[in-house]
Each structure stands twice: as C-alpha cells, then as structure tokens.
Length: 127
Image 1: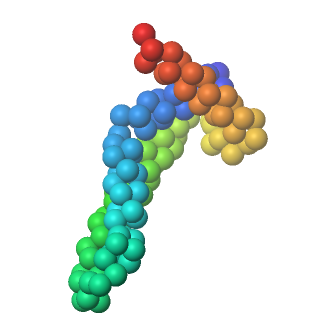
Image 2 (image 1 turned 180 degrees about the horizontal axis):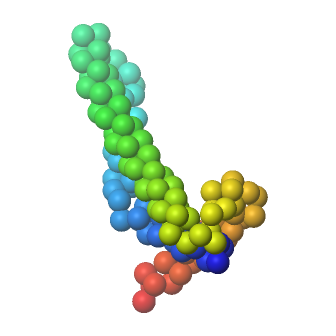
C-alpha cells in the first residue's frame, strides 16, 4: 500500500510541476543571462554608467526570476510533504511513509515513475 501511495503522490507531483510556470521563469532567466553580457561584447564604446544601469536592471530581473522559481519549488515540495503527512495520518498502515521517502528503494521508484510518466506524456502528445 505504501508503494502505491508513493507512486500516486509522485505522479501528482509531476503533473503539478507541468501545470506550474517553471519553464517560463527558466527561459526568462536564460534570456537575462544572455542579455547581461550584451554591453560587454556588442557595445564596447558605451560609457560605464550605462553599463552599470544595464547590469543592475538585468540583475534585478534575474534575482526576481530566481526568487519565483525558488518559491514555486518550495511550494510544490511543501505541498508534497504535507500531503504525504496527511495520507500517513489518515491511513494508519502508511505511518512509515516518511521513512520510505528517504530510502534508496523510494529513490529508484521515483526515477522509474518519472520515466514512465515522461514516456506516457510524450505518447499522449503525439495523439
């Protein structure tokens, strides 16, 4: 029963990650990194004051994107652990769910679950 609950929770976690805008913020961060080096390579004749303002603006945007990603990640992991705790509280037979979460068997089970989810998702997108 513990393994079935664990697999179900990981599948819900992967679905939640797909629904949240992680990819948007990662692409925004990569774009900021690309734009951050622009004044050094393309605009060599520009004043240092302009370069400082440019770097400050993109650094602030990069910091904001990183904070959004961190908040999303902490929220998803927090909800995952909270739901595991709630399930362990409801089903008395699953009281070792947190101990199982820290085992190697759970790690490999989550990797296999992710591969299965990824393959099914790719097959579903083709149809």
